[in-house]
Image (cartoon, rainbow, N blue to C red):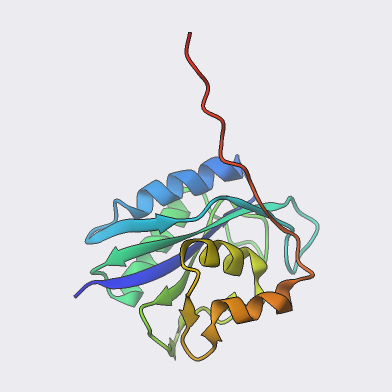
Length: 168
């Protein structure tokens, strides 16, 4: 049985925009999974540890046959292939993939909490989520749009799409 899952993507090292774009393509190649929607890219100031470059963020929705834990493991594998190192909490990273929503699942087990426990506090998650799913609801929290005001002090800017270059 397929489920709609929502994934947050972020990077701030080694050409972050390219890291996020490559990861979006990789999501579409996961077993039993297809990319349904993807947001624009957003630039955001770091949260927590602030002495690092700004982030590039996006949100994607996939339809997947993978169970939540299997999907999380696949996301961690993509991070690893992109050279993700977990040196300390909120450290700079080549790629960060967060399983934000998995259908209407609302649960906690070791290493996996759904919905993602901090998504209502992050403008860099809420703005791209609302771009692709304006009526999105967060299980146990209500409409995603109702949480935007609490993120008003965060710097999150939508980036223009890349300009295609004409060939001569």
